[in-house]
Image (cartoon, rainbow, N blue to C red; front, side, top):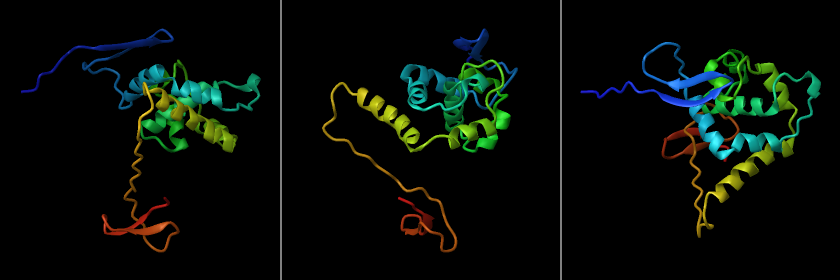
Amino acid sequence: MTDCKSESIRFPSCKGRLVETSFSGGAITSDGGAVLLRQADRMLGLTDRAARSLTDTRRQASCRHSLLTMVRQRVYALALGYEDLNDHDELRSDPALQTAVDADGPLAGASTLCRLERGMGREDAVRPHEALVDRFIASFPRPPRRLVLDFDATDDPVHGMREGRFFHGYYDRYCFLPL
């Protein structure tokens, strides 16, 4: 028999908005994991550091959304499985994502995020990764003697003679294997 619990879990409030999980129904979202991502991000500070490492060339007087808010919006949406920018035209109104990025109104739309991404250069792509590496190194009390990086290929079947196509023996078919 299932042991159901009716407890709720409270998260820090956002702009006066009560944030809690419960199992009583009501306003439901399938993207509640965004709030958990935000909690982990508060502890690690990754999006904050990533946003500080980027060059914001926008005219600040015309900006409605901060760089930090847009970085969080994009990163959390990617973690939730929304890889396409066009998803943000709907997501910008999602209360769970708004709460996760500490906003109480509509977030950036797809065109705003697209302009932000297209305005970034090569260095802007590298610097946020440095934040991840630095955080990873800081997670050890002393450096490990050995570190194993295990890169696995993804089963992405291809048809025809596409560039980057190689035969993968495990999957017994041709796959896109750019690495």
